[in-house]
Length: 565
Image (cartoon, rainbow, N blue to C red; front, side, top):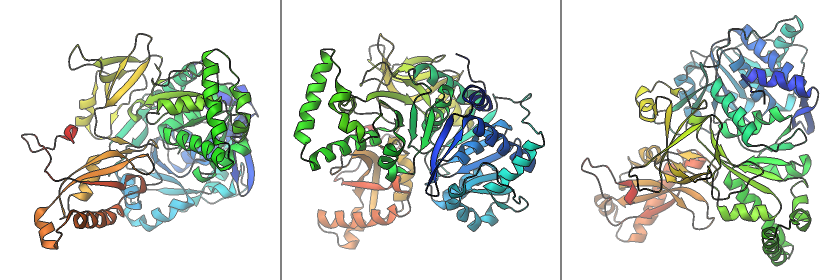
């Protein structure tokens, strides 16, 4: 295969190889639009020329908003003119957004209308921001005929109009001195601006994942249609779901949002989807609920048993047996690739029994993010796949007799380091070897298995990362809480993995408030945490509280022994 050496090279190859074949399809203003490989190259080139004309070459551009052609073009354009793209989680609280913009020292912001008001509200704080470019997915156009770019806040169509005029005048993107080894993408991990880490990636890192994914996730062709359902700022979706498929010549359809995925599946009839385990779980539960509501649950369950039995006998009738189920998913879905968190092997087996292939991958933002993945023509529900090409791995065991150890990797996809944090960089990165903080092992066939997490980070069912220390900072000032430990827990009602907290109440505060029974303490604690939750973004909110009767066991330095909680 001819390897991709730059993101601009990727879209240039797309133009040459696939021409006017649809690259992206999406809904806008109650109409379905598409943009071809050829037109996306020209579109991105125009955005790059316009940004360069405004003075953005070599500067930092924050990109905030929903998945869109404009988001993707802005990302590739920024990197292609030697800038630094700073993708931001659009679900952050507004004060966090402002702090990240300041911390990253961004000069330009590209954001959807939803978030432009946030930046206008805090405009006086954004001294270093030269311009804010506002996208509008309801007014998508390839070539607007006019636009003004002299104000601080301009619309994206004005930027495109400027780029269009420059492109028509013969201007091109000069990549002769383009450095793919320098900082190109700055990604902030989940957490407050005080505790989150800025992962620094170069273009070589991103291209290594695209090239590796193309080799490992073999079996995808130009005939495949993908449906993008995960947020674009997530490196898994960006590299594996939106960039790598361009190499194959796929058509990628952009979902209208998580609420409309079912409708979009029927509209676009995807053949392949990238998702997190929580989405796969919802997909399967939806199938079972439909069967139950129609009185066919028992029939479906029996058919699943039959399907598994026949497969063992090398008889595959899954697509015929579950045709009505697959028709409900658009009629053509043949494979899902799951990442972001561990998937239950039983769930994987059940989805496969329906006639839909399942591959699982493993990655971390610091590795851009892919480390391993199961090839499409393979199946191993307990493993997270084979190592990426050009990567090395070392299992660092505490004792030689241990069955597993910390996963340490080295390869062209490993980050440059943490932004403005040499100490934390040195803790995890040594001579190119990166300590993932995860425990695992490799079998004699080269499959990687994850056995647990060394780090405290909680990985929710939807793939979101939550740092316990961050939530504990919010809890610490509460007078009713003497000690607490935030941890991942299973919700009793939904079965989902959520943020929970173990609390040892303050005896003196309980006495002062007249909380004489355990029920009184539980009610008061619940009320307190409800107020604290208002300060937290949705996925970080505490969903489960466990009251302790004894203090936590601590080290000699008075640190709680988390592994004993």
